Length: 67
Image 1 (cartoon, helix red, strand yellow):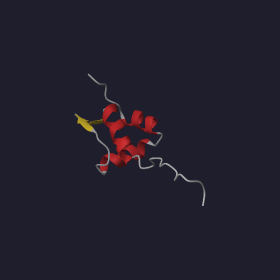
Image 2 (tube, one colour; image 1 turned 45 degrees about the vertical axis):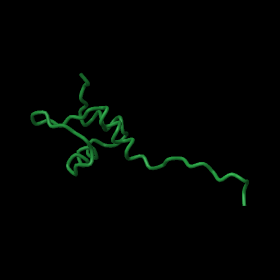
Image 3 (cartoon, one colour; image 1 turned 90 degrees about the horizontal axis):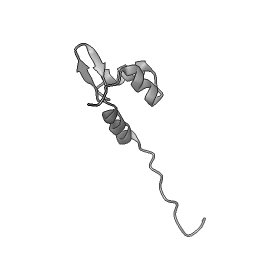
């Protein structure tokens, strides 16, 4: 079974503040689970979420030299 992360662990992994993690939860922007009264995160779901948010895909430069 996969271990669940706490908000501070997600914040550390994403290099953001814990407050930002909770804002994402409140806005329904990040996948999370409620366990009793606690919010927890599956690392695999966070990884997929981050990958879905990446928009800076490198593009190949046009061939044929500079204009």
